[in-house]
Image (cartoon, rainbow, N blue to C red):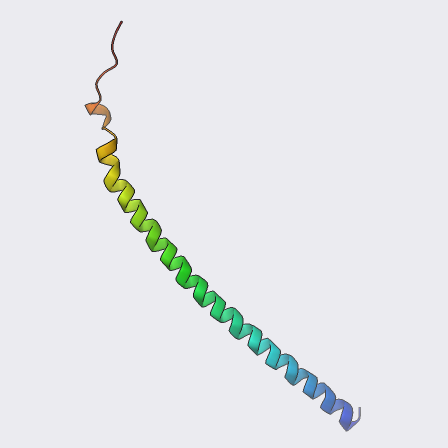
Length: 72
């Protein structure tokens, strides 16, 4: 291997590393955004679940409070 070939290979490797660093940074940012989205969705789900629980007792009677069916 001559010096020119080694330098070309070294330049190519440096370009690849730079590209990989850029991809890694992009993916890391994307993961961070997705984690925030997931947390926001989880909190929204918890809020909706609480609202549903608060609403459920007023719409549905407990079994012991139900009137028995009529007997014919």
